Structures are given as structure tokens and as C-alpha cells.
Picture 1 (spheres, rainbow, N blue to C red):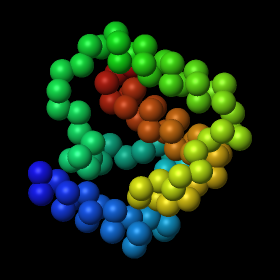
Picture 2: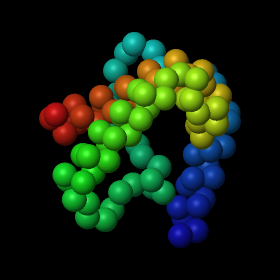
Picture 3: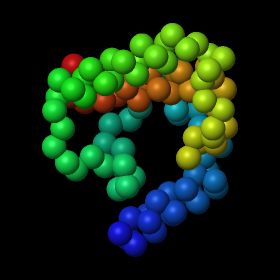
Length: 105
């Protein structure tokens, strides 16, 4: 557990140092690069029911869309820092699209 806390802390510190410079990667029009590393503390390692997870994702997308930009989070991204609602929207789209392509959807 200590190993993961150290990695997460290192990742957050790295974000503070370079996050604002690489932030446009999250929301620009270019696709995300393949084979990017994942923070160990957010890796999903347990079994999931595909249909349940698919429905959860659909509901989150619907909620995000219905809420509109005025309800978009004001919390800073843990790596990139503060983002506008438009940047959050583009970044979430890019991230989701990245994983859908990754799994051939």
C-alpha cells in the first residue's frame, strides 16, 4: 500500500510541475496517445459485470450531458489543475473515446 501512495504522491507532484504545460493534451483536438501509463491507485483489478458497467457509463454520460456546462465540476484535475467546463467536456470525451477505441468499440 505504501508503494501506491508513494506513486500517487509522485504523480501529483509531477502534475504540479508540468501539468499546466501539458494540459492542452487533455482537451485539444488530437487523439490521446496509446500505451500511456495509469496511476496504480486507479487501476481496476477486480471482476466487473460488463452490462452493469455499460449501463452505469451510459447513465453518467446522460447526466453529464443533461447538466450542461454550468454544472461541470469546478474541482481541479489532479494532474492538469483548473479546467474550464469546455476543457473538462473535451477531455472527458477524448478519454472515453480513447478507451472505446482501445477495446474496439
